[in-house]
Image (tube, rainbow, N blue to C red; front, side):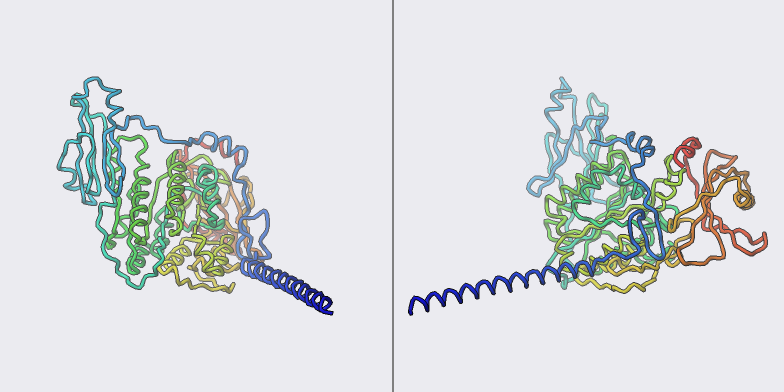
Length: 568
């Protein structure tokens, strides 16, 4: 009887274990299903969105033009250089940071190999701690083999037989003493915000010419915004709203730098060409990189100096545990992809990216190449580059906000939205967001859901810069083309020749009493080409029949008629 009882107890234990396993399995399935359901519910794709379009919402349709068109590749990709800069001059002096000590040193082996009489070779260095060049680099010191540098900037020149053969300058941001943290209520976690700008790079041009960087951004799971659209012709009209939230520079009284500074962030500003610094005379940056130092180097690739400076700055502030906001604006040059991808890799390997929000942005597409005269080039100019990278832990901490951001990647976005997002990021551990689909404000944080009903008109994008809803080619010999050109000749006082004419298609379900045409035309007085958007108002007399929308865009690409015929 006892054996039967033991067998019965074991049988009950087995039944209980099987029951427990079954119940645990069901619970796990339900839990995973709930997680998947939550993700799908949070990051669901709008029913209108689908293949064949970059943006497909109720208010905006942007066709997906091929980035790697065969004819475009043959003419613009294969001839684009890539690789490491090879200086025309030999680099006799180098700089490095060794155990938190900044030094410059002479390449003694190179000197021995090149010069028999080494006594006739000499190098001098001049330090400077000022952000401007006035009364700077006045003192000179002989560089014997190496020297410890305690200044922010150093100018070096080397000569042989009393003839200068080498000029260069070096920057050491870690030699600047940091002010104490202002905001004592900051979170213990460090989170920097970096905006890196590329001058004149469209989203599609980025994928052609920046393939190294594009692969890294994809591997980092950065979000690419397909509907990011410019709102003005030149860099100023697109970057001013990003930094200030206003469109007119005359209305500027503060900037995003002040917003971050008031929250205890250190601020940094650097640009390779003096474009934006004069817009902020009221700002006092903690770190400012003077563009005029580029003229002090005879290196054939001086642009790498910006990357050298920014890398040292990032490392220094990371080691000190200080969070910062910085804008770094680089010009386009052949080896930019190499230096940008190399910088991102170093920031990733040193764990800086784990505490950094990295925004890669452009002002507009390339306006000075042959492609710009084609329909594809015209669209690319209107759709610049925007990538946003967040550390994984921040995505996990604010899942719904990041789901909104990911969905907004397929919505119409402008620099006003970037500015609103940056304002939100002044307190990155307290993200406020909205999930309704009715927000038609001009400026919406990318953490809040942008309405599918958003149109170019609701965000104050001129029809001249709007890429929504596609275009329809209109023959240059048709009556409407001739009427438009008569109007253009009247307002421009120029005898012009029309090259292309495209009709803007209206949004789905929208009734308009006008039609917009974008015309490309040449001038008889110069080799320049121009682009203008003309609105034809229906049902009016000829006097008020046409209206210029925005300004007439000047395209500085001479002798391009054969390219237009090839690629249009």
